[in-house]
Image (cartoon, rainbow, N blue to C red; front, side, top):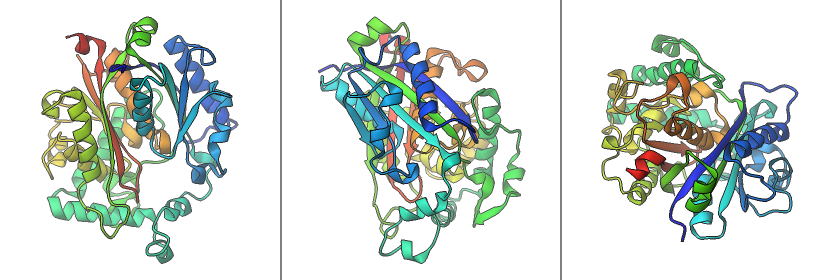
Length: 389
């Protein structure tokens, strides 16, 4: 067994509302070049296996994994394709490496959202084909119902949710690759277009084009290739009920279960006393609050109040979404978890620029695939200095 696994290379491209004139292949190629250069590897010689996250429905092409290998250097090489968020691919790569099957693994995830003509219909297709889809309701309706239940059950407020959007959009102003930086206030969110009560347009992360490629390695290869490896201390993933009728409303139980697995693997008993920063799914504003509570970084119903009090700001106890999250960077579909991971890596390397969290040693990334799913993944990352200490 190779117990320790590290991220040794990161690369990105895009992160814009529209990348006119660029195909998903060109986005992937650019991100891969940057990641392989960062890791100091030749994909044709040094990478043992590749993991991609692609969804046929979003791509508009059947068996889409057939179209992935060329641009990332994986032609005629082992490629695993996962119909899941990119953080699940990180977990898959960890398993490939710890089992000894591979020493170096590359992960790719992308979004060419500007090419998608019918996102609402695609999300609707994910609803149960017998009971829910024939009703013709949208995923936004489900999100609005869930948000309303969460606010009612916990005492959280729509104003606290609006603060999430304002904070993340403002944080994105310090991120040069963010697609939606803005100096907005919570009042602007509250005044934005209503979608499905109490959800408003600025409560929802807007889509963006972009790609992220990561390179992971076992300890031997990581020490050989990188002067600043970022170690994956723990990973966990879980799914809740697949049906709307039987799921837990108002609480992200799948995130709680995934986090419990990741914390046990990392040897963490109290995350709020160990984690220096967190990159948390914020597809919807209320979901960031739910996820913070499920991760054990806030008591149930208390995340909004803590956010308003500065606990999750740049000078708070656990800075959250200093990258801007999906609300500020843009929603990248299956690549969301990889974007959260990339920010953790940059922070733990100390190369996050103006948004750098001081003395960051342990970071947490969490992803969720969005309505109507109940799947989530969590990963704990540690800097080389933290591991050696």
